[in-house]
Length: 407
Image 1 (tube, helix red, strand yellow):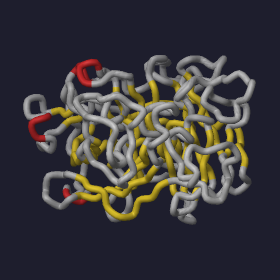
Image 2 (tube, helix red, strand yellow):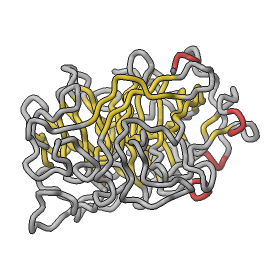
Image 3 (cartoon, helix red, strand yellow):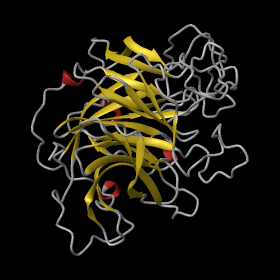
């Protein structure tokens, strides 16, 4: 997939149009007078590849979608499981993608017939950048009875009514960790997606969808649990990041925690991520090294209403005047430079390609200057490119000026 475009050094910085030159540091605060100068003063980016999985891609022949209504001309229910809604992507050494499907159709109430799954995607090899599903994926399940509350299916295969996984990481031992929103919980599975320990709750934080809430008062809004999750290089620490503020926190501040997988406990809050605007949300987070992370931040618009979608590099070793980790914008996803015409007609007039999707939810580092960014197409609801037409799952490989090698 990725090797279709040979690696090359980043060309001279691309001059961005004024409309695309969003703030290079957090607009919420000026840089700390005592902080060192940024390592890369002027950022540029270049599109290297664009790939897509067609929206109407289906997998296991288990009916789904009985809880939703027809949208964008797509009849429901489906005779099989849609392969859609990717909220995480782990790029494999062979260039294939391991992608995590979201909880299905957006809520507990309408996603009971959606099987939670990880799929493996590979290039079709026809030169068009089209992806297809290949062997190597799995569904999530609880055959060993690690979940103490009732599940949707008697066979204990997990559904979108049970959990809402939004991020995942593979540990050095081959097991997987998932960050999810309903609890929020951390889920630990074996390589086949079977839970090997009870869901790990976040102490002191519960959403209205938490199955263990009881008569307690939630202090996190629905669908604002763990959205992104990074992992240390040795796999010991997980850094799950909430999508929304905890009650009482500033509306622009999101908590990132540190979980010790060896000791099986949280080690407190790792840092606070400062949104550019209280109306924004984060889509994913991945670690660069022991103090730098990449974060996707976005508004809630799609198509013509999409304004702000960006990739930020945050450095927890340097703080701004408000005490937040320093942010540097690496890519404006509403105007990714495409000087080589990789995106074809999408960029032929302007020289830029937009990524105008409501939910952009996966990012991975694939080289010292390369990242892969993907959307969650919310099939069949989202229509980022063409009104009335369900959007595909798209992946952009982007070259950035920042050095993303571990330090």
